[in-house]
Image 1 (cartoon, rainbow, N blue to C red):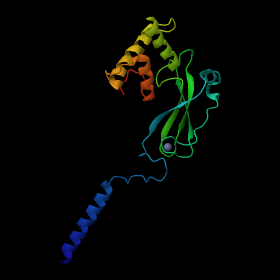
Image 2 (image 1 turned 45 degrees about the vertical axis):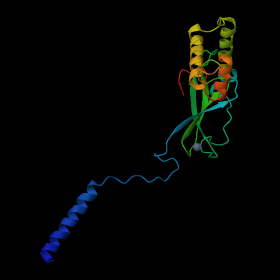
Image 3 (image 1 turned 135 degrees about the vertical axis):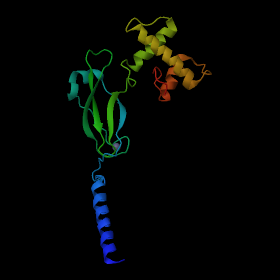
Image 4 (image 1 turned 90 degrees about the horizontal axis):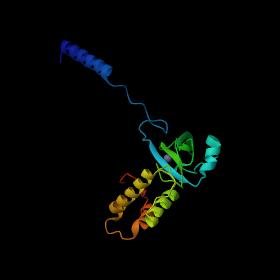
Length: 192
Ligand SMILES: [Zn+2]
């Protein structure tokens, strides 16, 4: 390679490098902290034994007990993450339910009373007593909206067919208990 060709080669190499560096995307930020942007956020409901009347009376001053560890990754400490408000039968206003967040896996944990299924305002016991009353007496109890109670029974029958199959012969009340034991909301409109 003579000097002229060498100079041209080095000039081209320099331009390419310069141009290349100019158009290279910015390097990705290093994942230095434990809360990197690539960590996926998850939601989790934790059912706890609480009295709704006390939560209603004390609002966000209610002394929720912080879980000892993250239920998803077992990280030793959870951070407070504010509250969500949820409606329940028998209360005029929404109740404050405490949330926690795991700094390790990003999981957001929301408390919910054990007495209620997820996303249903009526308590499990009142749903069951309504359905029992209808099956035993042929009438719905006088309290609450009839349309909602009918939906519960329709959904229960459908969930029994879907999850316990047509061979289930032990009745709707036993079906309710069986579905509950399987972790299925018996009156949910959603097929899980
Ligand atoms: Zn975690």
